[in-house]
Length: 445
Image (cartoon, rainbow, N blue to C red; front, side, top):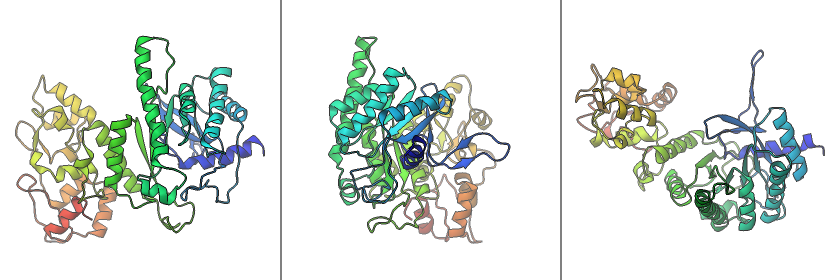
């Protein structure tokens, strides 16, 4: 098998790993257009200065000793197999770089013989790139669960970022769908990488030219929808990973049925993309907005509302904090207002030192008043001519596309009455009952 045939097989097999900024997109330029986002082969990440960089996304091999039920590359699946030699993959990467196709490498692999043997092959690829070709571009390498810590250390000195995929959110799910893996085999290398990063940060302070260990940090990925694990369980696990292992990102991958098994959703099941989207929104709130997992979901509400984003959902269920005076509220409180992001909150704090802000000023600072107007005041006054009706609030907090789906599923009757956000908790009633509306906006449906 020639290198091009191997490349077709191993880039296609890599598309299910989403531990980078983009993957799985299949879009080509129309006649007269430029650019292409193929379904496999190229993914994207961001450099420290904010540039978007293209990476060759490929597996070392799709030959795998494991038999994970959800994986297209599992050993019991009948699929074309291929393997690169370290030299082939290193030369392919350099040739693509020289032609300006890519700026870096995203390298993962099936488990070839054993985790240690697989890691040794990956190390050799990176050694050739770094030492023989003097390649200083971005490299993201996957650490195989169960690999010896000595090999993890060697790989981490050659890569910019490493990741250990959790894949499934609980030990029970792993036992059911990935019996060759365990929580210990996953968390052990993750903990080792975190400890080495911390030690290395101290070494760099003491010795200016100390070699860097995984300078871009580590990340992980979870598959969403293949198991009964709830959003509440997933979000709490995500919060714990950020706290304990100081991960840069937790990536969520909507389960794509690629194989049939009685333990998996049926093959015609659509990927839960909206659920994945809600988890990413909640992840953003954990990392940048000061929210805790327990504030967004709890034992009684274990799934995110499909019709409204987690921040708006939280605000509607905690109207005791609103309306908020933007001229006095602390930065941490401003971040909790729908329509106010990190940048606009910072601008508000700076601008109000020299002037009293009004609604026109907030709009210039980047506040999305369409959403924020229901939750804020300026100088103690709400926005002029603000009409707080069922449909007005729905249109404000939902996109037009989602709103049309909502109205299709929950048609509003002609007897809708005007409600006040500031006198009682918001209850928007699709079936004209307080109970039904409350359940919609509080994730009880």
